Image 1 (cartoon, rainbow, N blue to C red):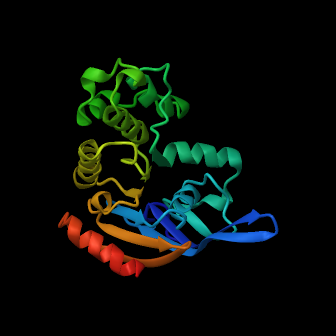
Image 2: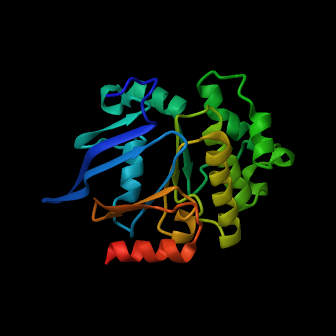
Length: 247
């Protein structure tokens, strides 16, 4: 494996995940491979049941895998104890969920600070994050007083506060209307272009995936194909390429 100092943010090799349903063994991931380079934005697409969310959970170390390996910034997750994995995840992974997962009783600012406090990073620059995401004037609001788009921006800020090696976004626009969803896509794109962030995003929508640099398509738990968007942000082209792969 590469030295951690020069390792890609993500290298997943031949990942296998099985689930048991009665006497049947269901293969959710079948030798899936994915490498993400620094400053790269990758979208994982596939129909419901294709394995895309399972892959994201495996990358995050939220589920055990049955074979293969997942390395984040050169660290093989299988070599870490549960306690060490929890600490490593807090320090190296930023996770954005469709449902936001903000704590209702805390302000926007306190929700952002949670991971930094857990890591004892008391000097985390929350002011800069709030300003960058256009949320400075909403810092004292609790989630119930924020729109869906504002809550997702706070969730993204929370994912970035510890300066992770990679950001994982699971259907980040799934609970948003199309206009607000596009705003979130533009924000993720800007984080890659301006801050050299590395992002892996799961989506089933071409209009969301087109903001990525590269699209990886899964079907029945297997790598089906991948293609680059070439920066065109062309919905029709991306949708057509996706459908051609699935045929």
